[in-house]
Each structure stands twice: as C-alpha cells, then as structure tokens.
Length: 229
Ligand SMILES: [Zn+2]
Image (cartoon, rainbow, N blue to C red; front, side):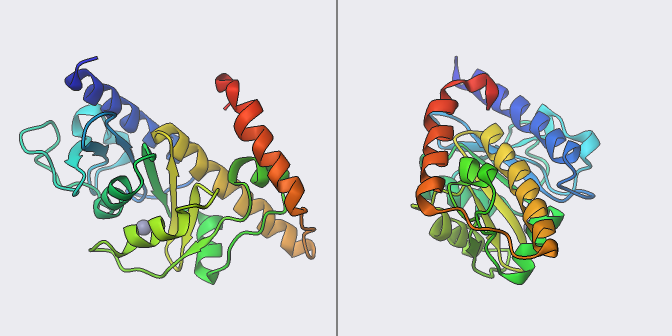
C-alpha cells in the first residue's frame, strides 16, 4: 500500500468507528473522539471538533502530525481537530506501541472517574480484557499536554488499556483504533456492572493468580482467534 492508500484506509476506519461510540451509548452531542495512527508514518487521523456524528465521513477526518498539528492542504484540514488532539498526540509520541486512542465521557465509567476511584477487578471479563483494575489518572485541564501526560504516566507498564481521568472521563488505548474502541465499550460495560454489584453489597474479589491466568489465556490463547476479538 502507498502512504496515500494507508492514510485513506485509516480515515475510513476512524470515521466508521465513531458510529460504534453512538451504537453503544458512550457519547452525547459531539462529545467523544477516536483517532488512529497511520502505520509507518509520523501521523494520525482524528475526528474534527464540533461536527455531528451523522456528518462524520472519511474526508472530514483530520490528518495531524505527532505534535497534533493539522497537515495543511489535506482533506478536512480547513476544520479544527478535536479539542482533545493534544492528548492523543502526546500518547502517540510517548507510547510507540499504541495505534489507536479513544476518549468518551461514558456515564458509568465517568461516574467512577468523578469519585476518583479505580474500578476493582471483580469480574472475569475485566480480568480478561484489562488484566486487573481500571486505574484512575490525575485531574488535568484541557489545553496543554497535562491530560496526555496523565494518560501515559498511568497506563505505561499497566495491563489496563483504559484510564479514568479524575473528574473527567475515560481514555483508552489499543494496538489500533478498533482495539481502543473495544476497550472503551468494555470499560463502560464493566463500570456499569460493578456499580450495580456494589448496590447489592460488596463484590467478591478475584485472587491475583486467577486474574493473571484469565488475562494470559484471553490475551494469548483466545487472542489468536482474531475473529472472536
Ligand atoms: Zn473529555
């Protein structure tokens, strides 16, 4: 594939993945965003700022360099990129293994973020997907690198692909944009279930060695069947 073809493919993927945020009820109005790294290039594709989900299309996705600057003269470049672009760019610069980033204010996960409380690993699905708790990142204000720094500091060396940024919302990372979207969907799902469980009483913990075994199996054995992921 030429670079142009690769960029085109990432534009199409990132545009269509935004529909998954709507499908799973993770976003309202124009909130939330997905980005995808362009493999082999110092570039990523992200949602434009303030555009309705119904209007998102490959040609209004925005191509940025890894400093979050819009690449001039490319489709969509007349618009401003997502207000979270600096955070996405910081993650791509500092976590070379990351190929996709997602941000939402999905209700249950953000309710945990508002409490500044990590979601404990009390479901086998959490052990599978996140390998333990979903951690809390620092309170950070939009507009500079501070959100990106908080994401990278919290998730580096952590199994979880999701972080609850305190008083704000969820950021997820993945090997590509689809993987990061899956993490955002699963983070909201487990945030909801663990919340409901706590209304019933105290959820039972899962032993650390069992969490390790579940995570290892899901990520390695089960993970080879890509169609199931
Ligand atoms: Zn936000």
